[in-house]
Length: 243
Image 1 (cartoon, rainbow, N blue to C red):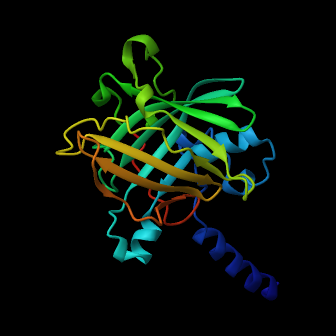
Image 2: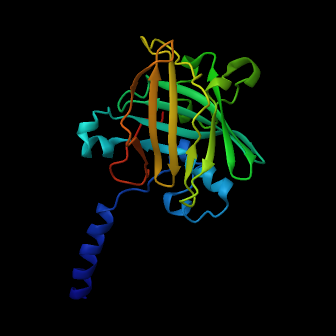
Image 3: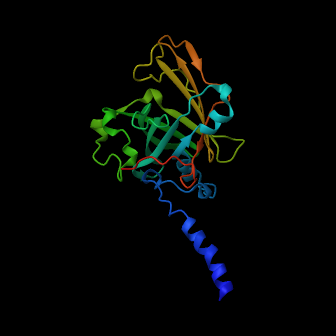
């Protein structure tokens, strides 16, 4: 009996020290766990799941200070109902600690136009301030009217194709001309060109910024900004207020 008590004491202490169950955030409910992502063999579904999630460049900022990139995050959550060969998402881009002041908000529709080629169609919100942190809600954009509340911007569409050298990796195709208008107060910057690589690990992004004459003003490092896919179960995962 004495030996049994000695065994039970550390076991009880272990139970007390155990953290409570981790609850999956609402905005991640339509996103598979990281370990499940690599098991998806259907290319369209793999691509859809790679697009969505919570991403951060924190690791690169800490490990490569010479790049002088600010720490930033973005959340991409599924919205609306899926249809064959297409799906909708909401993206919010922000600085850590300033989630109520997003740097960018937009809705994207991804459409399969060929077997392995996709088009990202861009929509901006007519009143973006009404939808800040919409990803926190149980049903995002429940009352939104696509005709009344969304502004289609074909000039910012991107085509995405598979990387022939790496399975389940995708790259955007450079546009034939620079047409994507920077919205908001951007100083002398008028147009922006975005290129990204997509994989299970996350996004690698490069930006080029142009003035109204489409003269290149600045661009990100050619290595690209690495936005890693975050796991909400990690102990250092940012716990944003979900109220």
